[in-house]
Image (cartoon, rainbow, N blue to C red; front, top):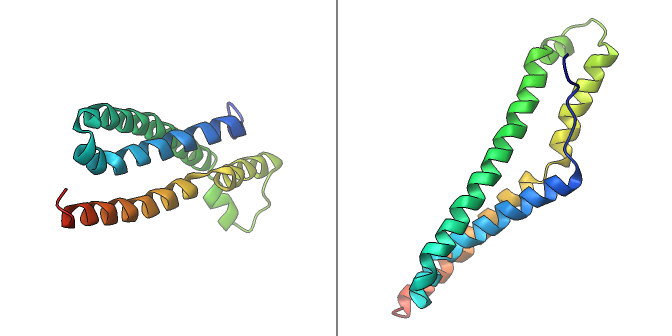
Length: 131
């Protein structure tokens, strides 16, 4: 094991959570903004896209880092085998599991799910009112 992987600081976790949430809000506001302030449509859309670029690049990096630790150190094979697990393996397993537990991605998914339902409902209501 070259470098012992570690979880990122809470500040970074929350920073990317906020970036993801703000991007989700921007995308869900697009139809409403288009109805009432069409001149703001493009800036809001760019904000959402650029935010998602950063957010998903970060999520990709974290996901690949976890997979690399598991694959390079054959952690699945070691856990499935009846042989003892070394202290280094335990540290790697601790990293992967801690990383998953500390991740706030589930909050982003829940927020996007709820906000998407609200956005569709608002758009349908606006359409029915003739906007």
